[in-house]
Image 1: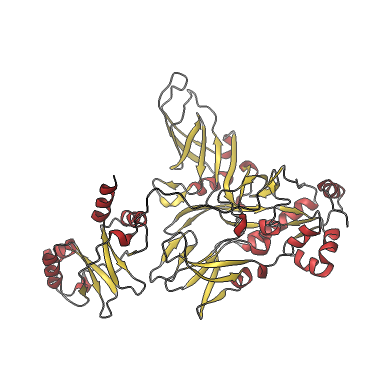
Image 2: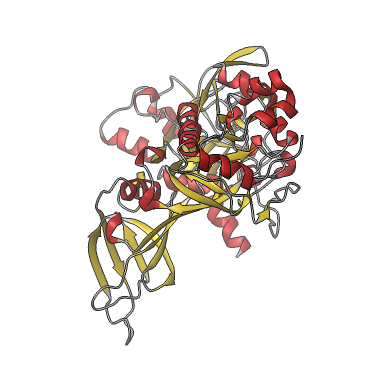
Length: 500
């Protein structure tokens, strides 16, 4: 057959004869008709994805106040936005946290509130100039009061994601959700068969200028997304759209326990079926898409691969890891992705959406490079004290006081008869117990929910945990929950002093 053009397809949209199917429907059509027959029969395949896309945000133009202000800092509902653009332009990122509510609320929630038509409080400060004399501004706005509200997302629509599990002995809180210890669960993200990029993996129709469905409005691909890694099937897109046209059901702020905030973004991309090769690409199924299950219990960029798995297996709700049946759960919504593909299909059939071909193709070869670091980043193992005094569970406060006094330290891990960590005692705990005449078993005063470190963790990860939990030391455990060291805030301070 001769290839179709985008003009041929858009003419069919205009006269109502266009044949549109979703990416879920296309594999069956190709199986029945073959790639050539499917290319003759189908004009457009619609895709969809709806998941947490942290690298998202919005440019907001507030209009000039009277007297005018050149904002040096600005907060929306107590979430700081970037102001290094112009006097009253700001960019708010989805993962920026509220200064008063912390992880409960962030930039993603501000964006959702604006799209939903809610009022948002603004507080801005500035230095005075002759042309911008105002130093302080407090007001409230809705999206209708703002001149422009443009969602601009540097990295959206990942082609696929690695799945996540956790082989360590403690619960982890990550951008892939809560990961239970001992490979207790697997989480994954991505739309699989509906994945926009997997339906055009060589970027024949997706590129700069491609018109897309973005959060219920028409938007555009503006370029390759950051961390675009097409060689390894981790392509990404940079996208933008008018927030004033968006639908709140496809824009949702989210909080991930122990990690922070994000923004759930709905994206749908039409794939014009210009030839048999494109038709064949859109015949991909969940069984064809393979990803790695990584062990997030290892605090390294290159995490161990536990196994490879298809999206068909992930969506089944259960996979096998080393002979153990493990529950899988999605971090994205396939139901919403299906709704997006269906809504985009309806737009096209009603003549409300006309696909465009790229003005420039995206690269289909390339890999992501790691950060260049000057000097090796030390790990916990490089800094921790390897000779650690512990105390057996069941002994007394007096026994602990004696151990701390003789050893001249402040933190004493408590271990079971199997040498596994069960708690920790500090010199301050003992002082309080003695003051209250509590000199019986350690179990009565020890901290049981102990924050711990892994020897392979980078020092900055350990430092963040010490700060987050307002503690001064962490036992370092091996994979069997046995204490192999201890790291303190003093250890980290001394390291930083040596490096400065």
